[in-house]
Image 1 (cartoon, rainbow, N blue to C red):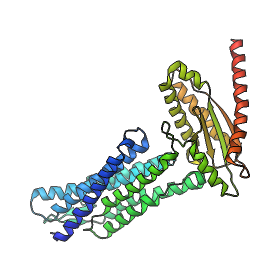
Image 2: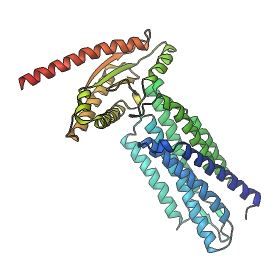
Image 3: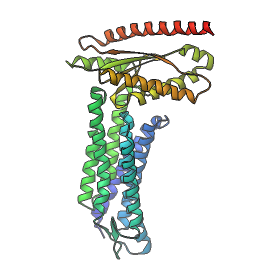
Image 4: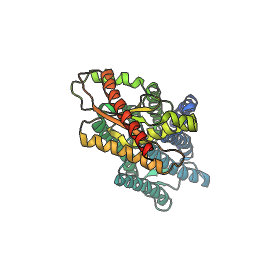
Length: 382
């Protein structure tokens, strides 16, 4: 049986994690009332971290104690701990993907699914054949050689999140920044320490510390987010203007997207329907631009998309994806149809953000005049 000092340390670290998770839940209850994949992944990360803080001291207390109940607790507790660690790191990867607006390829999804299935299957199989861990006749937990296979899955998700982040940074440049070390360093340190030294229980509490850092980052970022659509707001243009002023060479293109007939949509169907249309439009733009750039809600019915390229083919592909997304959305909506006018313009680093906005707005006015003129001609023809 472990010494009281070690058991006390296990309780202390996990109670710290539970308290920290409780504070995060209370302090961010407003966030979890908002729907969205990003918030759902955060809740799941918190849930698995909380489960880890509960299960770890229970399994550790039952270790080496006599009796059938203690044996069941050691087996079941450790099996669930493996699963909570694996799913916690998996949902961190999904959260990061959602926050950076990155998309996994089909092959990547299959690999992630295979890793989850393999990890879960190993834990189930371990009940019959000790691969990951075993429990001796004295009910003492013991790691087996397959433990490192399981750790490879956990570390694989963490390493994958690093690759995902740097891939987004390469494609999105200035637009894709997130202090990944806030989450990565505490979790990595806790995983390494507990992997090398059984008897030290720090993973769950380190996950809680990592999540606290993520919440602090998201809170500071909230000032730049549009409450309705979740994309960046008008204030973010000032931040971009300051950042662009520091760069000598920029290869950035701006897309101004204006929803046609949005005022009539509000009048005919109500503002609640208009808000839903804005949310749909933001989702279409996020999917279309992906990790290549960001979306800003510029006004009530206008969005600006900045993409990290001036390649005409890449920009045209983004516009094509936007129109394709609109067409797909309209096919499932019989009450109203969404259409947009889109203007694109390369960003001139020698000018200010206001100059860019003025230029692209003038282009949009011409585009809108042409659109409504054509609309009137079509109506007369009918």
